[in-house]
Length: 317
Image: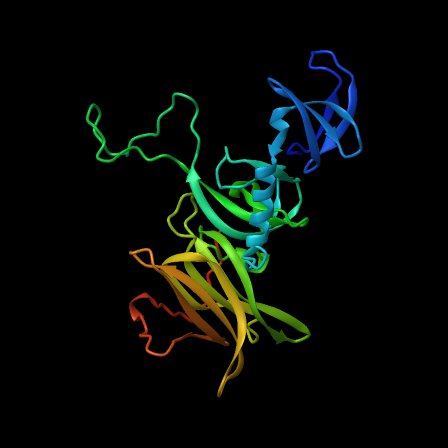
């Protein structure tokens, strides 16, 4: 058995420049392989149609099983953002261009973003990575040439297929009300913490993750900001900001009851230290104040905590 990885393809009656169409197959369809001839395979569909199909349009049973396994593993993974594909793109089993792929995301399709990864960008044949800038002409570079990197998103499409797509192929949905506050950074994700009442409106308050505006960074995000709504001035303000983080997805948002404060929104971020260990940090929002929720025995790391109640500056255009 094999599975069709092309969006759609025709079956041929012979392997030749001139041929008749004997049927068609679509993405994800299972076919039985009857024979192989160099670049082509003779297949039979579940409807009984037979013909020759280019082997590059087929993936093995093992790749199909791996796709199903990945979808099952990520079934309960919290969604970090939603996005829209601005081009048709392949869904890969691994965050690499040459990794196996079975399904595609159509242009305009919506996806749920689950994780991020980076991998070296393939270079044209014969082209080597550029050496570190600053080395004098005729002298060796101080370090090995760095390969350019590109980011990938692990996504789930509307049909439930899970896999890796190039991040630049996905436009992450960011609320327009807070997109203006990016200050030149890349907005990774935005989470609704709760809503406040302003007249007849229910206005969301957000936790937003930011990163450097380039691929291949060693962190998923390096800054978090909480935007609360000032009902008197009818505008968003920065209630909390923390930067210099080696942040790792996923981030989780929920509610928790505190003795004197009642039910409050809480969020948990994951941060990696220099040794590669990942620890969790929990925060609570009692509008407009954001505070760490320390576990028993946990010491507050004041050196990396930054609070501000100043108004968020709008990005200048």
